[in-house]
Amino acid sequence: MTGYISIRNLHKYYGPFHALTGIDLDIAEGEVVCVVGPSGSGKSTLIRCINMLEPFSEDSEILVDGVRVKPGANLAKVRTEVGMVFQSFNLFPHLTVRENIMLAPRRVRRTRKSEASAEADRLLARVGLTDHADKYPSGLSGGQQQRVAIARALAMEPRALLFDEPTSALDPEMVGEVLDVMRDLARSGVTMIVVTHEMGFARQVADRVIFMDGGAVVESGDPADIFAAPKEARTRDFLQAVLDH
Amino acid sequence: MDLFETFFNLEVLQQSWPMLIKGLWLTLKLGIASIIAGLVLGLFLCLLRLYSVAPVRFLTRCYINVFRSIPLLVLLIIVYYALPFVGIRLSSFASAMAALTLVSGAYTAEIFRAGIEAVPKGQFEAAAALGLSPRQTMADVILPQSVRIVIPPLTNNSINVIKDTALASVVAMPDLLKQATQAQALAANPTPLIGAAAIYLAFLLPAVLLVGQLENRMNRGKS
Image 1 (cartoon, each protein chain N blue to C red):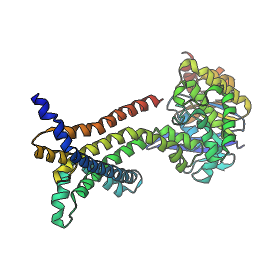
Image 2: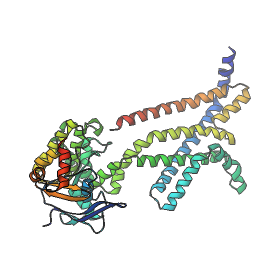
Image 3: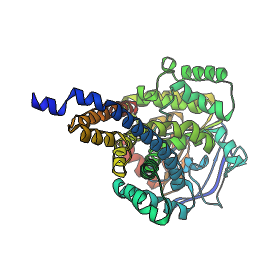
Image 4: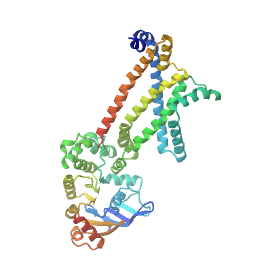
């Protein structure tokens, strides 16, 4: 089968370093996939290849909804369909919260200002930040900034969302509010690929968990199976190390 | 009191005042013209330095390094006294403006470059991930942030240019300093020099304070 997102033979080199060693992966529309694994295992690199923030080897192939990811018109189309949330939020500091959310719809989709503004307010309500629309990002906590970043990604009405360790830069007490929003999203039917160290979230929310190590997918499957009875020794070691803390 | 009579002689100041104002006018004209020409040259050099082909990038870097190293007074004297030997004869105003612009342009180019490079990589990535084109990314995301970053150092550079206009008195340009030294010779009293210093301060001290405020505001704006 080919998925909504289909990855074939994905290789990525940083100079001589082989960061992704031939990954094959299919993700169905509406599926929520959590990618876990030790740092340096290639998890972030993998999802950054999907919207080509990282260029990858020419003989590799990534399709999003049948469109091949390559520079030019294809990439522009894929990027309007696939949203991304970063570890460090990357909100635009010179724009207010509402303007951050409106920018892409206004520029890329040419949405009318009044319409984009109304949509921004609707999205802010959805992530629980109605009262913060006119503030600048620097006036918000980390958790609030990340929720704005999610709203900003949603403004383009993406069919898939990539999350690159969305809670790793947050103070512990703010992790919950971001995960709550993501849990909500998962129920809404949008396709999600989440690189995360939050094993509890992966266990509860994911349809499938993928364990990566050394630039390859070591094991993947139902979260209940992976967490209860990992088949591979490397998965067992990793889970033991993470869950014992 | 003698000291007061010597350095703060109001009568002498009153007499020399029209000369000083005439000098001030020329100083401001030279300063502002050089600042504007330096900004244009600097932006042009910065774009070459960042986005042109390798040999041009290399030459631009050489230019920037040379003109940041050469003492302005040396450059000015070369332009005014040496270039006539190869048939290039510039007025004292043109010589001073050329020297100030060549140097200011080199500094300005580095300020602009730092401004663009200081915008974190994540900003480019967030814009790209949202589907903004490279041009939209520059116009809506990167440059607005760069401008805020470069305003304090650019103001600083402009203050330096205004201060350095005083060097033009060496090539006999009747700027504020030159007028003051002439008035001093006429009156046999140093009060015009004190007056000139006070006028420089009246213009530049507020500018220096403004830079401090801009820098503070910038730091507060950081997340």
